[in-house]
Length: 189
Image 1: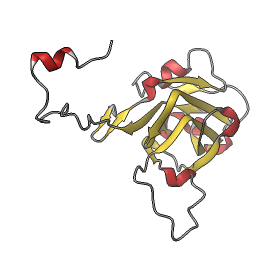
Image 2 (image 1 turned 180 degrees about the horizontal axis):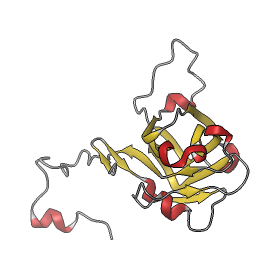
Image 3 (image 1 turned 90 degrees about the horizontal axis):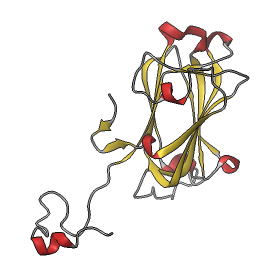
Image 4 (image 1 turned 90 degrees about the vertical axis):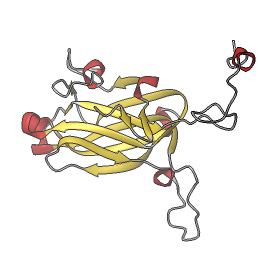
């Protein structure tokens, strides 16, 4: 499974997930159940949307999508758009990806540069934190293989940076505050 990818962690569980449409029994639960045999199936006109809303602004480094052309054929997306913003009304396209008969995990790395208008500026200095920062991410299926109408997406994972304890010696091997007196005050009630 893709739950832990070293420096990244899966943050999709911290979000509220909604779909533009879904066939009964093929909704958000199947999209997030860690089973590549189940899938979300859209039910309506394109674009088909997966909306991922966080309660606070989060850093997003990567979105991974599992598709299976061998099983899903014309239901398999051939073009997707990743959009980000603070809410539905200010989403901006971050990436557009063309898929050629995908089978397996598709990784879409995201960074602040993807949303920046400074890309054309040769003097632009990249941000020290390359993660995309957003309250909301949307995966939009723009087209399917063989001009299919509805889509199957088997899994979607959202990865952010792994948080490190900083400055107070609280991280492993941090030489820190391990006495009983200090541990009494280590949490906020």
